[in-house]
Image (cartoon, rainbow, N blue to C red; front, top):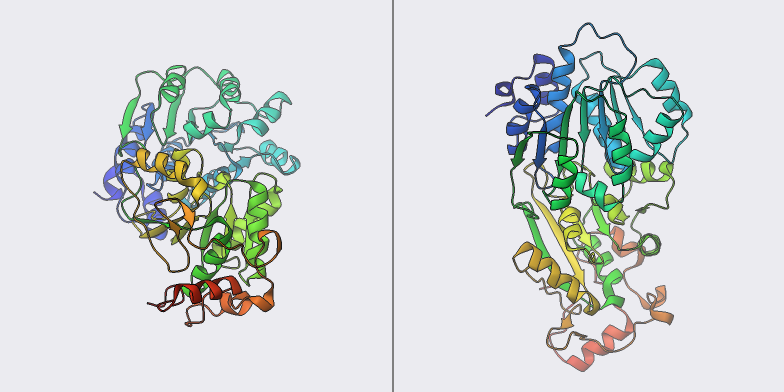
Length: 441
């Protein structure tokens, strides 16, 4: 099936072709005709399958047919859980609707409300917003939602996880009773169905993937490694394999900042992305990562949903998430739009329970990748190397005790020595022959 068979007009077809898309994904094949017909929708699809275009394209198609609309009030409301996702939906509206005279704006917190207020006063057709800032504008009388024709709730399961359920209900009360409702979610959990029943009647249900499944094109592997060796191994693998765009996940904001600083010391341009960063810093980090100015983006789970980075090849779980479903969303940042991706997890002893829960959710075992010098004894779950890491307090060894540093990270792929400390050298002497450096086989 091609996009031209879905009922889209010539302008939208030109935009799709201009962006390099030729064949609609399964969720797009089923959702686009239903939305054009005006049906309510309850849609679930695994991450990375084109859900944003599945509602953006048909909504723009419907708006293009309304040639006599003169009001400045928004006709479409898209509610998202995060600022980054709101920005991406807004970008999709601009890209697909480039040939149409439609006005769109994005409303979220963390930035000045003045430009938002100016855009609202000029008039908006498509409004993309996060719940908190939207309600602020509504309560101040800056937004009139009485003319909303289409209401989209994107990443509904994430909305519930982040505690937005009360805000969502407040927004729905402000909407006109007659409207089209589109709910998109990664899963059809009981909580999602309960929420859907509160404002959707007789929806078309679309479920194009098994619950909690991961994209087939993602090559998943894990490495059992001592916690104090993780940063050293990560830096070495990025340099050795000449990886230029790597998304790394940590569990905490502090951990993301610390790892980012350590990677910078190793000569890898890095940026952190988490909830404590200002919106300006988050936008700058993400933009730098997309353009290649930032080689490693270290993020908490705020980045696990919605981030759409073209051809992202590598996702690294520096720390496993303690919620198994978050693993699926994290690695779903790669292997998107039919492209191959790689997801690698660094698993220390204390994370084995998390790994068991993840593998149970996936109903599969994640293959192990063994790198000499970086592994745990599987029988006891203890580090193969029992000595303390070089350097005080478990920090990386001083530069005069390390070989990698800036030169090794930047000299990627040139066969330089792997990171070694005095501890490792003495360990290999104890082990005898066969102590090759990691990856030299």
